[in-house]
Length: 418
Image (tube, rainbow, N blue to C red):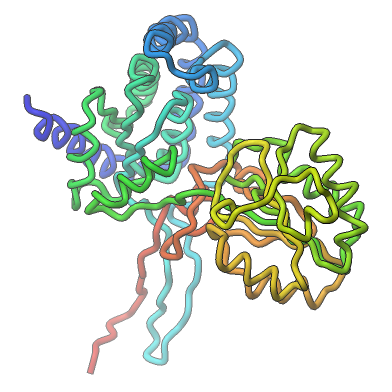
């Protein structure tokens, strides 16, 4: 079978699975998720055995230690996968929820109801745990999932999908609900992106290069964010001790994430008091500092920041620091350089905080809180499939509700249009 026919066959199977899923109850979905968790744990030894094949190939190819760590499955990570499935089973089911109803002058009632999107294609790299995480969220929201993991994790992903399909089959759910493109051929992704009408939504998870390639070639809507260039602005009216803790957390707690701070902006009125202690603390934690001229006059050991640095998503312990005249200049900087992911202000001034919330156009805008909190779990969504910076359909962390769309429902008693 050629690659085009292979991908179409798999996608058609997923479509059949999505139609079947749309009809089942919350109880059936929850039973399937719990069964998946049980079967994953029961098959942990076989899963680790398949994962070792991927690790051996990765080492042979000379992949980085960090990449191999993301690829590795052990008993702890498998247990976390299982717990994640159980947690999603415990979340409220959004499907069928009527979000709003209103009555028209002619007596008919109009409303909106949440329904599944259909078939969701997930294109992702490295981490095999994404296979289970994405499946759980899509299934709970009534969607079939068409998975295409990276070639570096193909043995692990095949085994996870085999286990998950075994579990859902035992609960009477169509196996097409979990479908995997079990090929390492890159052309499979390009064929998948052409299946408008069969696949309803594409969610790429990985580096900026992958996401831009998917977006440029897809005929299907893509939910995405390219990168996270996130800012924290320390206002002249900030509690400086709070600001220091927020900025430290936003940069150092986990620098390799998309919601880590990449540029810190300090109001000129507090810069001389705030920056010496703040930058000393960051430097002690191993952060490489790049500063504007005013920053370097206050903290001479900082490197000079170049214009292109402000566009960088470092995903590492590197930070840009800039002194600004006031909040207006800070917001102009954010407007120019932000990737519209996560931006924060630290201030005790209520009016400034409200203005910052209104005028900064990002998927999450925070007041007196770390950008690292822009996360589905932290926001109370229970889990997320990713963060979107798009403005159509969903924005910010994408939980179960964001994996549904709405349709209009009308309740009448014989109304006609005159």
